[in-house]
Structures are given as C-alpha cells and as structure tokens.
Length: 405
Image (cartoon, rainbow, N blue to C red):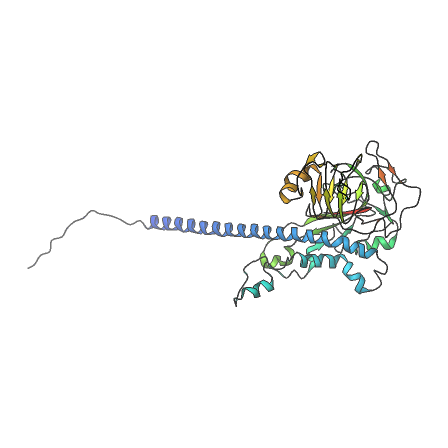
C-alpha cells in the first residue's frame, strides 16, 4: 500500500470584511478623483468661455464706438427719417447688429480663410463660435426699460451714472431710446443742478464739466472744460443666446456710451496737415507764442516751438528742440510704446485710436466761440444766439465730439 506524506504549512485566513472595505475605499477614491477631474475640466472650460466672451465683448464695444457717432451725424441730417431705408440703419438695434459683424464676433475663423486653407472637411472646434442671431438677447436697456438702450434724459439712474439731461420735446424723448439723438432740445435742467460747474438756468446748452479719463488734448483728465454730455446706457451678455448649449452663465454688464458736444477750446486746429515752427521759406518763427493745445490731422513741428498739448489723427513729427507739455521728443512721439508708457499718462500727446473705447469723428465747423477761464471758471457766451442744430456738435476744430465708453 502506497502512502502519501502530508506536509503541514503555516495556517492563514481570508477576511472578506477587510477585502470589501479596502475595495470600497479604493473605488470611492477613484470616483472622487474622477469627479474632481471633471469639475476641473468644467472650470477650465468656463474660464476659457469667459475669456473668449471678454475678447469678443471688447471688440464689439470698440465697434459700437466707431459706428455710433457717424449714425448720430446721419440722424441729424435733413430727411433722415423720411423712409425706413434711411432711418432703420440709424436704430440702436442695427448699430449693435452691425457692431457684431464689424467685430467678427460670430466666427473665430472666417469662411474665406477656411476656403483659402484648401483642406476639405475642416471643422472648427471653437466652442465660442455662434451665429449670435438674436441681438435683443445680447443687448438690453438698463433696469426695467425695454429695447436696446436707455436714454440719459429726464431721470437720474443713481450713483455711478452721468448727470442726466432734460428734454421737454416729447418726440425727441421717445426717439432717443430708438436712435442716438443729438438735439438742442436736450439741455441741462433741474436734474443737473449742483452736479455741474455753473447754474443750469444761465447755461443750459453747454456747461462746465469734468474732463473724462481720455486723452484728446482738450484738457487733462479731471480738469474743467466746456461741453454737453449726451449718454445712453445698455447692458451686454454674450453668453445668454447660447446658455443652453454651452452651460456658461456670465453676469450681464452695464455700459454707458457718451457723446460729448465740445465747443473748441484749442489754440490751433486743422483737419488736415499742419506745420508749426517755421514759415514757408524755412525761416523760424519769431515772437510767436501758442497758448493752448493744438489739433491736426497730421502735424510737423519744427524749431524750438513750445505747445501745451498736441492731438492728431495720423501722428506727428517733432524736431529735437520742440517742447510739448514740458517734454521733449524726437520724430513721432505717438508710437505705440511711447504713447502707452510716456505720453498718454502726461496727457501731452494724443492719437485718435487711443484709448480703444474712444473716438473723435469730424463734422462741420461752428461759427460761435465759447471760452473757459481756468483761473476763475466762467463760461463766456457771445452775444449772438447759439448756432443751428447742424453745427453745434461733432466737429473737430470747433465742436469736437468725444465718443467714449
């Protein structure tokens, strides 16, 4: 009979409770890590969406500033409301819609560029691309107002908003929320009393205001200057039309669009090229002093000319001995580096594209002079009546508009 030897080993055991506990713990840790990764990805997606909307919003605002003053000029022209063909492009709705087109806010890559790439079947993976076909969901009037924009007339919207104007013309009051209306019927009244420099009853059309934080050469930011401030308020939310698809919910932001009617307060102004500092024969100026700022389409300043401020549309060339605002420069001081880091903070120079949310469109020259004395601020009005509606606004030399947002 064959026998088998049994070998005895160390005894052991299996604890089903321990295995179950450890497996459950590891599974929960894995689920937690997965949820954290999903939350992180969602946060990153929302941040990217906010950045994308922010960049689009900035481009749209610049487009609105570029479009609105020209539409306001057209709205002042005779028979601008004679037909829908003439009046519809001037509406706030069409201004905002055109701003979306001008800012290229709907597509990150244009169709012509996609075609030029020559690769069939291309798909754009930018989640921010959208048709934005409903501007009424993007742009809305402030508060309980309906429409696209709230007019800054006949009421105060509270702190943080400009001083309101008063308009007793019912037609202009109604149309101001539909079109950008610039009218002599909009004046400073009781709502502005105490908020501006001089009594409204004596100076309803123009008054002493505080110069905004823009550099157009009329005054330093914060200084008094003569103007009338037309403004409209609206809110913007680019995420609302696509909230169901993207899940992004951004806060609606309020903006104020301003058009300043500014009677000329410059010593010299020209819409074209101007040369200062020497005569046509090349000889230097003698015993000539410029008291105040200078505006020109493009400027060349020669010799040892001294001016307090210089504003141009297309740049300026300065001689090494020229002094502007107490500073000396060579060549064109309105280069991007110089203007951002040296000139603009001192308000010595200004160029129309800066700041990006400001514009200075030209229009007709006024025949009436308005002056301001900074030593003892007094608005001095000539004996004649103010000019007619077509000439009191939006002129670079005489009535320069500052459109600001």
